[in-house]
Image (cartoon, rainbow, N blue to C red):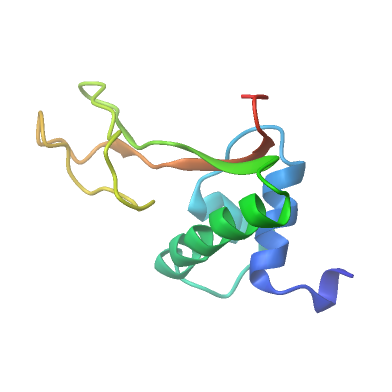
Length: 108
């Protein structure tokens, strides 16, 4: 199946099989995708809807939000998954990127 999977199908499989949430850059590296982080973030928007609907709400794409490594600020109110460049609290650019995993509802 591997060679015939779309990049979204590969991402879904990886996020179902991983034991820990992954960053977009880790996803690109592990799957050796020839794509940009921005494109993967767009794919994740579609994946979230697809996984939820195809599993009748049993599975969800979970996101650990970005967090400032300097002051600990958590970016909880993001409208969409993305990398954040600067902390609004302390202005640090030392930001932990969001991480993603697909989980059964209620497991995390």
